Amino acid sequence: MSPSTSKSETHRPKSHLEAARREKLRRIIELGLDPWGGRFDGHSPIAAIRARENEIRLLPAGECEVGKPPELQGPRVRAAGRIMLLRRAGKIMFIDIRDWSGKIQVLVGKAQVGDRNWELAQCFDLGDIIGVDGELKRTKTGELTIFADDLHFLTKCIETPPEKWHGLSDPELRNRMRYLDLTYTEGVMERFLRRTRIVQSIRKTLDEEGFVEVEGPTLHVVAGGAAARPFITHHNALDIDLYLRIALELHLKRLLVGGMERVYELGRVYRNEGISPRHNPEFTMLEAYQAYGDYHTMMDLTEKLIVRAIEATGQTLQLPWGESVIDFTPPFQRKTYDELLAEHTGVNPTDPSSIAQFAQSHGIEVTGKHPDVVKNEVFEEFVQPKLAGPVFVLDYPASICPLTKRKRGNPAIAERFELFVEGMELANAYTELNDPDLQEELFSRQLEGLPEEESMARMDRDFIRALRYGMPPAGGLGIGIDRLVMLLTNCQSIREVILFPLYRPETE
Image (cartoon, rainbow, N blue to C red; front, side):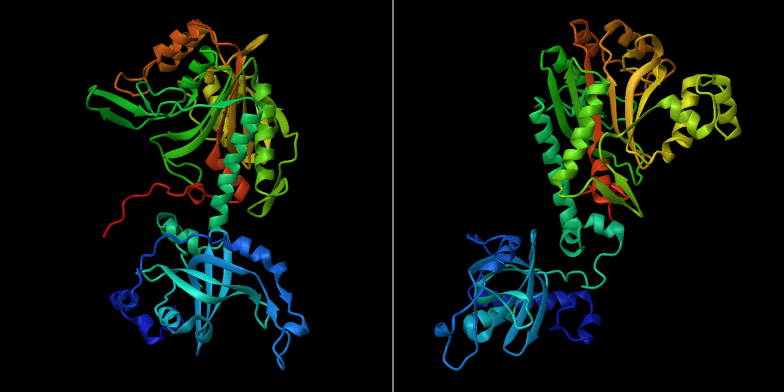
């Protein structure tokens, strides 16, 4: 509530509050000013202005007015920001303005800014965007302040902002109205700027490692590269159904065939599936492929990407997560899938009957399922939630990894790892399968039993054809960027790290 608003006004219908703001907008126009502002050159970020505090000095006695106490002198500054707090006291106003780098107090005195600027200041409301010229000094209480001598009106806020102390408390409202959340919820702007630094760091590290960034298609003729349900759309000119991509993998591997030896893409992926604190229908994925590497190569790369991303945010490698702490100090723990299964369930991981008996006793249906499918269901339910990590889980059952090369000397094992942190899968990587005949056989086996109308029941035959021309042995990696940001910013919901997560449309 603006300090200029009486208690009775807070109970007026919203239309009255808006009408008062529109009346001030009219008065600004009468002053000959544009209430929607314009170009405002030469202003500095508030953080940069605050950093100039050390330039404030006490004037020598000889430079002070006779009979007056010593004065402070500071640098001239120009700032722009949104009004967050406004306090009137006679012929003086104290205003807090904020930009995306920080907040600072502005002192507006009628004698210092002149009659016209003072009249303009009477039209200020919480949420308005203004520009200020003045001297950076400290008040008698030591508060760093811009002592204004000129004001500029840049944008009028017609809607009443959230109340100062309660703000946007409803999580759904905050996510829907991210534009308000960024301004009025403490820490949100920093979280999303931190996300940007994480993504920039990932690109920088990959570039330094010799990878090149590419852009694959988002509309696919065949939804491939993952076992997920796609979104379907229709291209009118070609009269064909197309699928929003569910993975980046198969087109990046085509580039390996073409001789691009280290490639990556950072882009949006779409899956027509459930919504949860760890799932959003559209999300950001990193996929990277390195010719002549394997899953151990990608483990080292994953570790480096995450550690450098943490460093780029200015944090230590010990990060808070709820009430616990995650230690990302390398090297990360590495354990095999079978080791962890035995450790957390007590079953013999090489004995299908032992696993089936455990599954049945815990309510998991086993009839008609491949033993490795049952094994993986047990792993996901009884092992995965206990993996505090970060831990690389190595060597998965081959039958559930159709795009992965088999382990030498043991074709029942796939050279695959998943990185788990706090029970959440963060990364997935393979030694890539490059045998076209085996790949075709595995795809065919994976599609067995799926109905013809099922959108995933189609083989990407062009990808098989590409493999026949020869794809070098390679390591491949996928990292869910949104989940990584969750972990590095201590957010328990994926919606808190996506600027505009999906919701049902609002009803009137």
